[in-house]
Length: 172
View 1 (cartoon, rainbow, N blue to C red):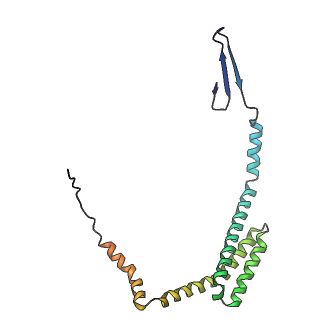
View 2 (tube, rainbow, N blue to C red; view 1 turned 180 degrees about the vertical axis):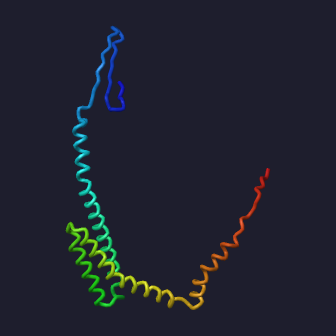
View 3 (cartoon, one colour; view 1 turned 90 degrees about the horizontal axis):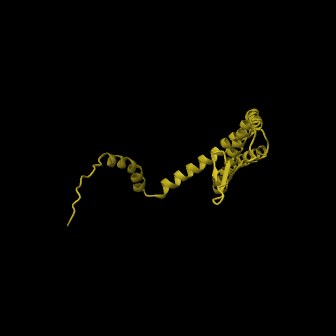
């Protein structure tokens, strides 16, 4: 037997006693005809615009969902560091975004995502400022000086690097 590149099976058998030989070719009947292939290509081209819009909508929803998750997590961890009216604005922006996420309006989803980003930016600023104050106040004055001087010192060390030359000595 032999299978060619198109998946067609060629089988042959020979009777050694009589010398007679029989051959059969088996083809797959489930292949697509040229008309079916052309129709599918035409359908794909006709729906390309809708497919592109759908991809953009899905990407906008994914971005919005990630933003909602991130903001909710930040609020749970650092919500006490934000003033109550700012926290309320952020929570309202989250609710508005969640409401439009189930719809099919990409522009509305993107607009509400931008609103949530702007509202939650103050939360990020507060968290960053708080962590900077905690970091500066936690150590001694010398620790802060060495931390800030450490990066400039490592640059100077990197410039003074010399590759070592060596020889390998084999002992017998």
